[in-house]
Structures are given as structure tokens and as C-alpha cells.
Amino acid sequence: MEIQITGLRKHYASEGRIIKALDDVDLTIPANLIFTLLGPSGCGKTTLLRAIVGLENPDAGEIRIGDTIVYSSRQGINLPTEKRGLGMVFQTYAIWPHMNVFDNVAYPLQNRKVPKEEIRHRVAETLAFVQLEGYEKRPATRLSGGQQQRVALARALVAQPKVILFDEPLSNLDAKLREETRKELKSFLNDLQITAVYVTHDRVEALALSDTIAVMRAGSIIEIGSPKKIYFDAESEFVADFIGRANLVKAVVRQQTTDATIVDSDIGRLACRKGDFPIDAAVTLCLRPEFISLAKGEHEGTNVVNGTIVSLVFVGDAFEGEFRVGEQLLLARIEPETSLAAGDEVGFQVRPEHCLLVAK
Ligand SMILES: Nc1ncnc2c1ncn2[C@@H]1O[C@H](COP(=O)(O)OP(=O)(O)OP(=O)(O)O)[C@@H](O)[C@H]1O
Image 1 (cartoon, rainbow, N blue to C red):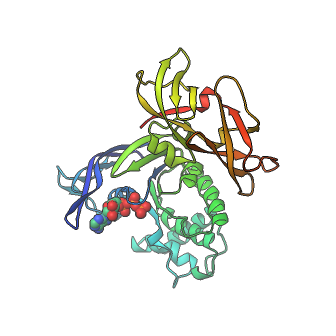
Image 2 (image 1 turned 45 degrees about the vertical axis):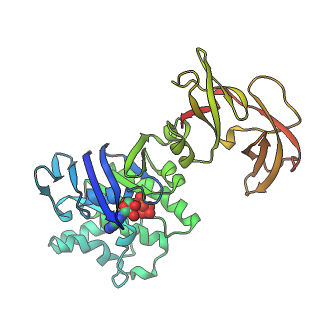
Image 3 (image 1 turned 90 degrees about the horizontal axis):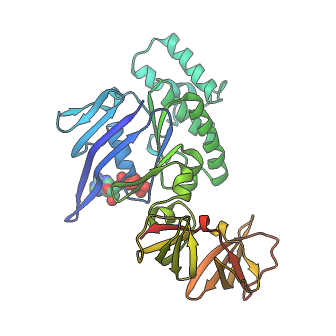
């Protein structure tokens, strides 16, 4: 089910200041996909999610879920949470420790006075779906973190919602379990064909899980696109920097050719991916460390950059190499079997399509 948000506003007054948690947000969340709200702490993600759920009372705007207006300041509509037909997996909605798995999952149905036999059937079906059949009698506290998350998911799904909302549901799990649970969750959601709205500040989680990512900043949605689009074709310096490790270099547009934009940058003259910028525009060159392939010695030719290695840090599957080009420090990903060392003169040639220009 599609969610349509129009002019949604929520301001808070705090210590004499106005905080624009939601600054007139317009947003369409498409049906049956995993849609992620990504942004730094305090950008308004949770406020937006809570407004969709009905746990936050906005100041103005409209929220439509499918054909139903669940909130409209103009029409004075504000449906209570339980009438919005949503499932939720929130950090703060953790499973109940004093109940067993069955009772945790059955709770939303018991609350709605669904007949006992149907409850048993639907809980069994949902537990099978999240691969927890046979766990009905297990006290919730005697489950692993990942299993507890699956119980929380089952509880959100048991009432067959049209939309399911997640607020940082994996943030209490350790790194390895978080990765496994994320994969499971993606496969569950793909099978379900349900509209999922997912809030996180973790870019890796957003990239791995989402069909579409909306990047938020200071109460506004600033960019929307597929994970690849956001990662490779960011439109602003903020998004390029937030979504992944990036070398950001100041540059000025000098020339537009048919297939490239030529800039003078703090690391030299470079042909970059063609961008729609006027001559003399001040832009930022975004160069991802994985596109820099350093080799020893001084290099010559077009789109060549030379520098000196400052440090190498081993991070398991690679080295993170820091090197200096003039006044600019750049980061490169270097293969683990490298013979490069600090102090080495190095250079690289970069393909224009790997040099993304973004607005400052
Ligand atoms: N009850 C409140 N009173 C005052 N300010 C609030 C209140 N709730 C949220 N805010 C402010 O509104 C802004 C948006 O908060 P929100 O929790 O939506 O951000 P977030 O992006 O979810 O952050 P995080 O990732 O840290 O949870 C923040 O500046 C926050 O301090």
C-alpha cells in the first residue's frame, strides 16, 4: 500500500529555539518495497515514522495510507494507531520478557478479541514464516538476540498489516548477528510483498536492505533513490559524504566537453563524469577510496594524480591508505598483499566516470 505524505510539519520549542523536526515534508512511499529513511541523529527520521504510526501529533499536513487519510490537519482527521492497520518493530517495542513466544506473537490478536482457534492457527503460520516453529512455549528471554527480533517481527506481522514500520530494529544486536538478521529480514520482506518503512542512521544497513533510500537532513528529505543511485550518483556533498567513505576535493568547473566535465581541483586538472554545472562553478569532487588504485612511482598522463603515502592502516580485508597530494589528504583502499609503505611516492590514474561532481 502506498503512503502519501504532504506538507507534514512538526516543530518543537526547546530552550527558546524552534526545532524543525519535520519541515513541510512531501513524500510518496511506494507500495510493497523496502523504503528506508536514512540520516544523521536528530534529522527527524523517528518523528516522521511516529507521525505515520500515529504516535506523534504533527502540527500540519496530511498522511494518506492507501486510500485512507489517517491524518489531516485541514480536515481535523487523526486516526488512532490501532486503526491505521500497521505493524511495528521498534527498538522501544521490544518483546515482553515475562511472556513466552506464543503469547508475545498472539498479543495483538488477543487484543482484538480474535477467536482462540484462529489465533492458534495464525500464530503458528507466522512463527513458521519467521522460522521459529516449535518455539511457542519458550520464554522470550531464553532466545538469542536474533530470535527475539524474529519474534518481534512475527508479532508485527500476525495481524496481517498492509504496512510495517521499523525503527532501528537491529541496533541492539552485535555486528555479525546484525548482518545475518538483516539478510533474513530482507528475504522475509521480499517474500511478503509488503510496504516496509525502515528507519536507520546506519548507511551499510540502508544500502544492504533497501529498495529505495530517502536521505533526511534537518527535518527535510534531500534525496531519494535506489541504493546504487544514492551511492554512485549523489546530488549533494552531504549525501555523497554520508552514504559512504568519500574523498571530497574542492574544484572549479573549467570546461564542458561532450562526454566529460573538466575541473581544476585541489589535486589537479581532472576530466570528471559529466555534470550539469556552469563554467566557473565551485563544486566538490567526490572520489571513493575503492576507485583509487595506487601504484609506486610517479605517473604521467591524463587524469593522473601523484602523491606520497602518509599511513597505512590494516582493516582485515584491505589497508586504508592515507596519502598526501599537495595540501590534500586522500584515502585509498589498498590490497592486503601490498608492498607499499609510508613515505612511498605513489600515483594513480582515475577514470572520469569515477570522478563524481556534486554541488557544494
Ligand atoms: N519531544 C521533543 N521535544 C523537543 N525536541 C524534540 C522532541 N522530540 C524530538 N525532538 C527534536 O526533534 C529533532 C528530530 O528528532 P528525531 O528523534 O525525529 O530524530 P532522528 O533522526 O530519529 O534521530 P535519532 O537517530 O537520534 O533517533 C531532534 O532535533 C530532536 O532533538
